[in-house]
Amino acid sequence: AHPLDGGRAGIVHRDVNATAADLGRSAAAYERLMGPVVRDWKQVVPQVLAPLRPPVPVHRWPALTRLGLRSAMPASWITRRLEDDRAAAIIAGCAAHPILPLASLPTGPFGVLLALLAHAVGWPVVEGGSQGIADGLVAELETLGGEVVVDTEVTDLRQLPAAKIILLDVAPTALPRLAPGRLPASYLRWLRGYKYGSGVCKIDYALAGPVPWTNEEVRRAGTVHLGGTWQEIAASERDTAAGRHPQRPYVLTVQPGTADPTRAPAGQDTFWAYCHVPNGSAVDMSPQVDAQIERFAPGFGDLVLARRVTTAAEEQVYNPNYVGGDISTGATTVRQLLLRPTPQWDPYPTPITATYLCSAATPPGPGVHGMCGYHAARSALRRELGLALR
Image 1: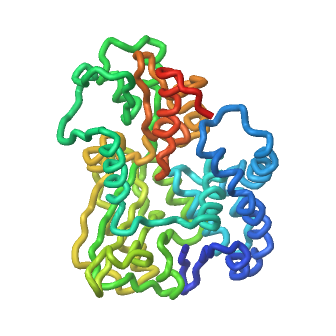
Image 2: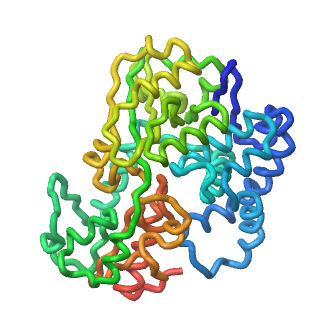
């Protein structure tokens, strides 16, 4: 959902036509934009979650062509074609996820793709909390005889036991520190030239009740984008890219209790939000974030029982891959989407024998999908064990 002033909102339903029906003068334009790509989603999604290199299966060409014709442009170009401010705000809110100015080319594909996923499969939350994903993966690993060792910092790869394959879920710039003197100069140059993007300041809230959004339909949404009109969001993202802290930031919020009431005691609720800030920022943005929430949900502040703020600088402490608070582990520019993290046909192997990168710095890039590790593992199994994988 994307609330606007005056109690109005753009609401994304699973059905494209139902969504378009509420978008006034942009109803037909929104259906033309999203209808064909949503119908194509089973051809589109597997390809965009794979490394960006040929060959592309011939049967996917028509669907990818339709996606490209609608999205291969900056998001600001797409929003200008949508006369209704609710339709434009929906696309702008999705397009701001990669933390780039809306005039940047990748924002159009990101915006349309995320809207496509909202229609096709929804944006799910894990019942009981996202820890359940990690717990499930660990349980599966242990059934196969694996072991997870925690609370042990690795500062040099030589600390690791002998292994047929080593997969590194690390930022590219961390690799030289882990393997001093073991990387060729050309590879080091590419790693040192790897760029990180803007960061985030995140706030977790414990609430005495659900967020009192002015618009009733917003109260049922799992993800709510805040920031006003697409022009306001564009201004906020320009500020962040220029190294400024926006006073009216774009804010991504999630209210998991709409789908999972087990997240909080009866009558209470959990809620989290983040906004974009310059890389490495130590600024607490909770006043600005609270103000944006209060703008569309008057009385929100009265419900806050507790809050925990994590600045961009603290995000890197929480996860060293979030360099400077960049939760994408690398700027999502055109260059770094195509050559992520280095210009190799197979982007996962490193020059160190049987050692692979598998973090969000590798294709297909950031997101909660696990596909970086999936493709890195397949590369390793083919190269090191000679497995013939389809």
